[in-house]
Length: 182
Image 1 (cartoon, rainbow, N blue to C red):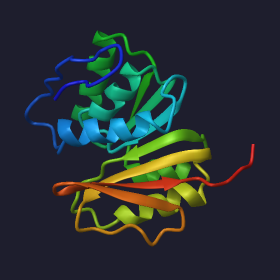
Image 2: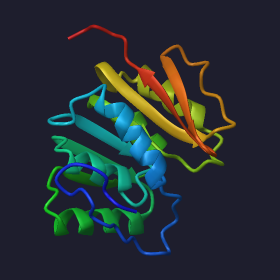
Image 3: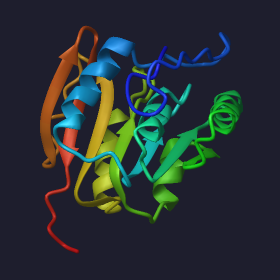
Image 4: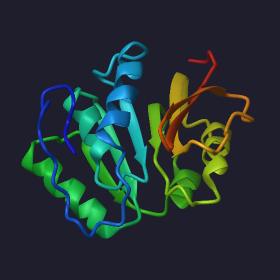
């Protein structure tokens, strides 16, 4: 696992082997950030990383100078790894929360430019993520929600769905807040 862009480009991340995670592959992450590079300006955005796991995605956004990255995971071991790595590399914009993602979303009131969710593939509540994010208005106008999931799963029935990109067994589904309120 490595950081593919920004200030920490090339940095190898070596999370403990015992973390309960399935990290986004470097290949899929590189493809995702190539897509995003053409759509958003990473500097000064506010990112929410749900099911953060190793912090792989959080570190990538922080390396690219996102203003704030909130990493949420229910595993204390994952949260401790993210905290320690962020401290070690002076990524002060990363804040961590040990929480059940669905409970966190129900209580969240901040809005974000980008929300990334990488839930366990066998989680049967994956379609609820988009539903909750849009019901709670957690995206800023033109904000983006990206959910990583098994390629066989289809999340296109949500009205804010834009597209699905497949990378082997993994897919990213993109949802955009079309609201023009400010």
